[in-house]
Length: 332
Image (cartoon, rainbow, N blue to C red; front, side, top):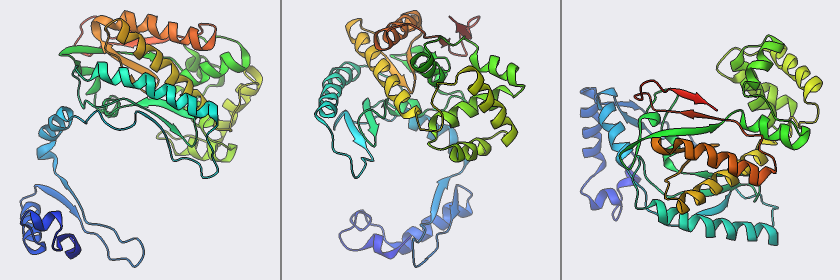
């Protein structure tokens, strides 16, 4: 909605648009309640653009259009995002990136002939430097699951999917590395019962305490979660950790390393899938596979954990699609 966007040679001008016609179009769509519009402001510093988006009348069509989109399998499949200004990759780091690219090439070549919603390439992305974060990302994992259960009803090669998910992944990894113990399957629930703090708050605490780099920032993040979290809740959980798992590092951003370990595990399972003709899609610390491959996925995740960690302290859930009668979530 700015005249400079319609200058000679611009994409808009080449397609026959000018600002006056576009304003008429936008006004008509707005008057007919087909779009929402929030006008921008001409601030001297950081002006804001006019925001326009379709109304709910197009919701279903837009959802289906988004799910049917696909991205080209091009570009680098392994790289460092938001690289630190003082970071100089070591020879070990460069070797790791080269290995990732070598591994991601056959993974993408194998997957390109298969079908799934929001199809696109798999990329291993580090943040800051090699060794931090390092999960495998794709557009598929952005499909909603909790707010609207779209992803659990998705298809791979026209077959319903099941999701194989590591239970309490970051605390479980930390407990094995720093305490050499295997957490129970219901770790979060046990902490909730021991501290008399709601289960959702327990999960929120570990999310903040393991990902934030200071206690102050962790407490601030904890209080901003959806449920009403208090400083008392935080202290109760903090004290429980001091008395039960004192060696686990809190408030140093350790989750960045945990996510890197998850990336290694998921990559291992995806490579294993190529050898055994199994389509594996990454979902952060979990994977999606065809429903018929759910048991295979469970064993593959345990195998990946054992190979990387030396001992199999892994626990997983299998989340079956809602339409599968009599199954639901199966614990192993």
